[in-house]
Image (cartoon, rainbow, N blue to C red):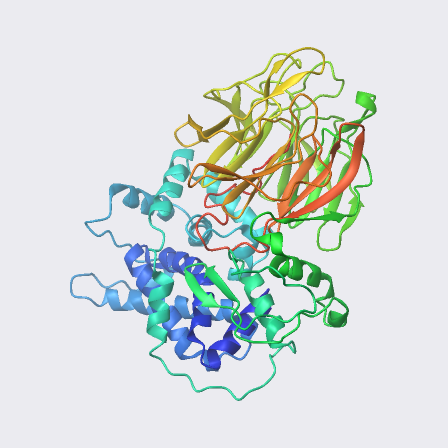
Length: 617
């Protein structure tokens, strides 16, 4: 929301320099990536990024359209890069370059390693517009929509250019690029350094007035911090209810790098949903109140019932494109009815829409979103055997396209996307033979390559991507008799670049037919089953510490073999089997991260293709 920028700028102009730190935290990685794309020197790029924010703060009063801060800081950084290039071209130790604006100035300091030189060579082999988009994606951590907004282009154009740029580079070069950029991210403390600098800059205070968009102070603070998309953690949030007074010293403990005070006001009531009518924000008030004022939020999250899916089913899969969730395939009547049904859910409106059916009727398939398309892979259409079918869905055109079959037919597999490739992992071929198979699919070339096997053969697992690694979680590897499967708690991490697996800490509860979904920098394992009683628990995994935590609030309607995906920091659990019948129930789990930062490491994919990684079996 640009309203957050407007509120923060208002605070800056009224003397709160800390508010500017939030803008720095929000845009620093994007500006850093932009500067590097033009200068090709990480140290120079960091210096220009710092100078751009200082200059923006000094001239903040000249910005007329406050919600255009992102475009304004982009223009400032671009002009500084041109000045930087001209200044370097005049140095006596460099040859004069006639038209520096046409091509970035490559700089290879002696302390930069050969990998960086290879990175420069790879970028130099591409047209300049491709270089910039790749850098914004890999170094800036931006997705196609964010890049499109940043550059003033259409998302379709960005996706097309990203795809074309990737096709022009070898896989090894793309892997190297991802790793090199990961090692050169902005150093810790960058935001703090900017805050200390701007504290010395005096801006004439503005005269008291209402916020430019006509909302109250308390409301502005709430929306600003939700829109920044950072990890909010409140001191003593217990007791906050709609219409109750706020304490005088409520605080956010951490926002990105910045510990800041959120509220230093007293006796300000939280606005009710009724009070928001006519503002255009009435539909978001319940989620604002849930995110900030419900006491279970910090430890256990909250569950909310949503509109039912039109077609009750289980054995389906769900993936997200452009904020819409697509529930695909599935079955009911114990296999007597198998679906090709596709239904689209819009979390913003809580409404379902029927879409074009998948060409192949199937259930126990897996889906993944990549480059704005959804790939439906494997499954079964007769309950006697698995199928290798791969079909691509374009949500914009509402059209399906047949792609190259997967080499190993299987159902109950899980798929994830990393670095523009799709990895099909595990599964079963006959309901009794469990597979460790890993096969890599390249959507550009439409071909498959065999990769090293997963250590633990299993089906009904769920996979999720974090920081370029795939986490294979849970599943089943044993059939004790008809429909009697034993769950696993096993977690194994796969490195696609090195094609290697390593063992990680076990999940707390053995299960299969569950979902593992990434929100922020954590993975959430939800529901599932172990030898058929459904499991209600929600467990959170932190890959950084390799630890699991039981969450305080269970899912209200436990189920297995459902679809699930995350949108805006909330996980939507769709359909499934509840131990008695197949259901259409949809429940929303609010993890507390209601809007994820586009800039903080681990908050969004840092490698191309890490768009949808938590597949639901």
